[in-house]
Image (cartoon, rainbow, N blue to C red; front, side):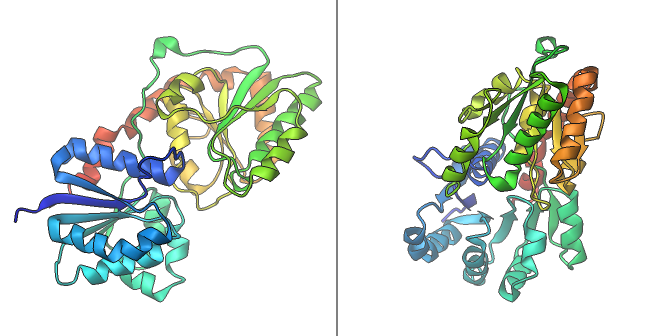
Length: 348
């Protein structure tokens, strides 16, 4: 029997309208790899289904191992304890090449807590991390099976001739990520309100985009009920419309409170639209954003400092406008045809 090149085990959420980072990255990796090595050489196996999937997972893995030379796993932290050790053990008689594409930035701080997980990750042939920070952290823990593979997206890059330069208020701002406390949505709101109150006019408007985190709907509904008219929730933007929507904004606020944030795909969205991000200074953001050239940084969780940066922009809009071309140039570095070669070069 001739083996296919690749099986990908991840949260594809087929038939569901899922807009979280895990699902988006899983689908993008799958699509890019099919374009790179051939559609008929790459099979997808969906982990969606909770306990129903877990019950059949060993059989799914054996099927993958029987028919494919390379196995790519893309578990979130909820599934890593089962998926990673099990695929390593089941692979022992097959000796397929195992690849672990990490989603997010949590693995370095998480892997050291569990003996079985440490063993399993060491047995993976290649682990693909999103940032230099993650690479160095894992390397310090003794892992040598590492490749750096930044996040990427299939996304339209704004034509330079269509860039919009705002010079007078109100300046339109937006957030473009999961809507949850941990993403600093309240920090963005507080900073905008402080600027408007200090300057005694509607200098900034804030639109909030994204899927509201399950379990935090009541918190968000109550939060928005207290906001003035210049702060609005605008729902979810279709994947292929992000550049078109973001291109209408002065800047994007990325106010995450996750120090271990992975490579934020929303920064690619913003830069592709020529919209400079104003972001928390977590390690992943500092790798992508050159402060003052392709965006602005502020101390993580400090809405007062965020407000200060916004005040600078209000008084001198050229601070933002002068970065738009650099953002577009930076976005071109993260096109799929470049980044996917990191993974495809390891496919045997």
